[in-house]
Image (cartoon, rainbow, N blue to C red; front, side):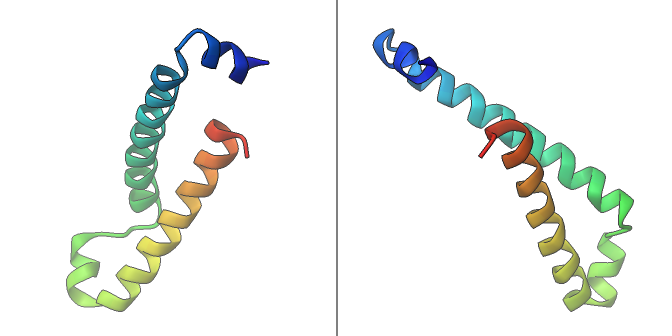
Length: 74
């Protein structure tokens, strides 16, 4: 029903743009929080690049999962 209402009133694109903006803002905020929480720093990047990449990949996956569950609701 909600999708059809947005489609009929030509508000679907505006709604999708707003959701994308919220998701991007949430992603940026959560990545920074997780980096601080897991102590992922530029110093670690210089000392041990493989560990830094692994941790950043873990953070990326965790944040995307949170966004999908809380914002996108898949």
